[in-house]
Length: 440
Image (tube, rainbow, N blue to C red; front, top):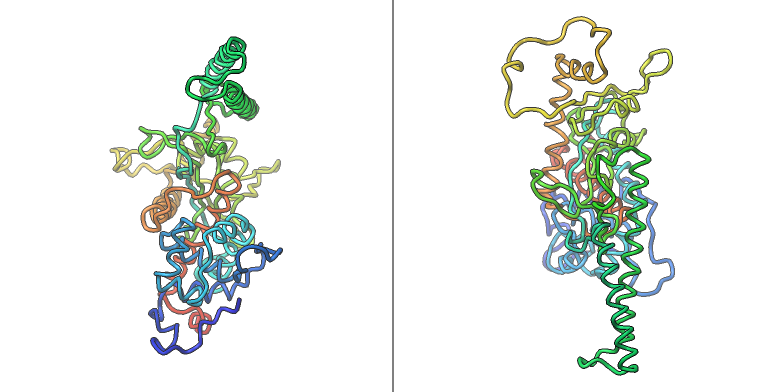
């Protein structure tokens, strides 16, 4: 399909006049064309719905996510009613919701490529430094599943025993009734099969929970959790029940991780989704998620949820000669207080070298009390925390539409791309990309 956005019309005269010159949609279309993405998957068989241009589909999803539309049916409907989406689609094309859903699900490589290339574009436009710090954090994002569809290992065992007892009773009834139907009109063989199928599904769920328990035991990350307490969700088996909000309630969720630039841009430079309910094992992975071609990380700031001696050592990479090869970590070792304590108000910054008998944890706490440590750690609250707030409360993304750890990572890549396009547009003063390229 040829997408024509320039053919003059009677009213308005030109499709480009539908929207203000500084509108986000112009920037997204121009930037997608500029970065030249190539790693997309399309319907190569040519069957089903009409093939849609990949650049158009990418622009459609980026703009939709940046402006709070996430459901494929919602996006499809908006291509008829929203002027910006009509412009993206050339007024004539209206991708079916199934096409939108499939494109979103199948194009993780495309979204990751767009993520890296828009950051390189920001570098080219002098809005992102090659070398600098990052702040990392995690936040719970609801899964597309209800916690009421979950069952614990212990409860699954109890239900299996109940089902087996019911099957035995039904077999006895069948023998007594000689294959006759129940009074309600339901056949005994069907009732037996239904219970056996459910018991088999629960057995499979228990095996999955046993595997999770064994893996956690090997990693040393059980945190006192017993096998009986493990949960399995039948709607999205990869999601987990996690503490949400202020920690007083639980949701079926994933843990979305972000690494954000602390050098002034507030662009997302890394991130992914994990099934872990806390951030203890995420510091090294969060730093590694930053593409090397985008940022040479000089320092990392993180809250106490990320701290462990092992995690800090894995990031800082001190070699046998005592030389540090990785970025400097500034990680709180305990939860901070609201406001400032009396000690905080005192000018009691550490002086001289740390005592030789200090533990690594004490050294980290001391480092955060230095002038440099305070300045770097302060950036965490000014960067990654506001970015999560924008994603959840401005863009409105609080729940994944897709299911399964691989699919939600794909969707999280799209969320990161949408945020960065929106943020870069703001950093450029909402000017057109061609204008910024010419004079930047």
